[in-house]
Figure 1 (tube, rainbow, N blue to C red):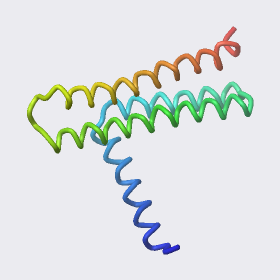
Figure 2: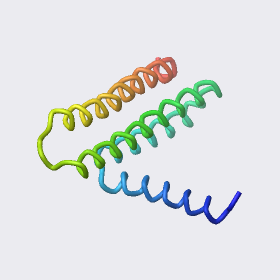
Figure 3: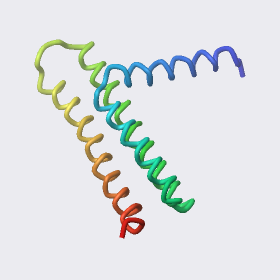
Figure 4: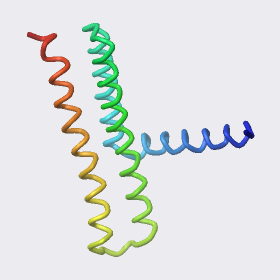
Length: 117
């Protein structure tokens, strides 16, 4: 394994994350809400299993937002015209993020509600 190449690949991946955070308002919202959820989870001393579920849920939302951002960029690169397939690609990717975000809210309710009542 060439560690220099791996370090460069990691740097490129990190640059992609940073670019998404800088340019995508929804990514910033997801990160802020993730931080809030992590702080609340730490305050409530949730179980190890709840931590695993929470972190996987947060990771899923952020990962899908990154994929959505990549799809939007590629579609914008390929065409500036309004095309039904371009719109569908963007809408479907955004829909995936929406599904993950709704599931994340449900998971949050299931995890945190018992600590609140």
